[in-house]
Length: 97
Image (cartoon, rainbow, N blue to C red; front, top):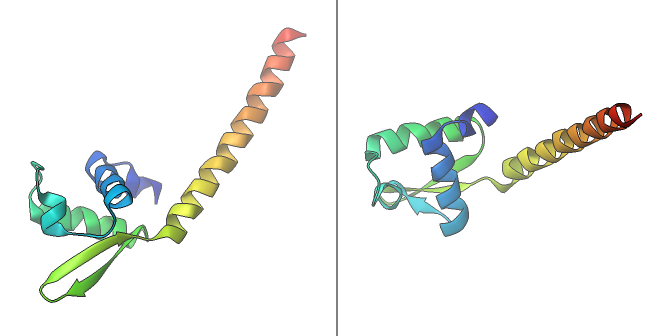
């Protein structure tokens, strides 16, 4: 999941879907220097990671975020952040002694 989000283009796609809601590839490509074919490849990587899904509407595919996976990612990052805060607190305590 985090490897999929590690790419700048994919992270930007997730940000757009998060702020604008479900979008077609055409709308995702609008105003971008990335081709629709490249966006499709990036969306497929995100879909494989479980972060997005698509729904066919006629000839278009509408892409949207999968909130459960995004919540799982958020929970994991909060867990890691808490552990780092605890470790840094212990280090601070050792240094100050």
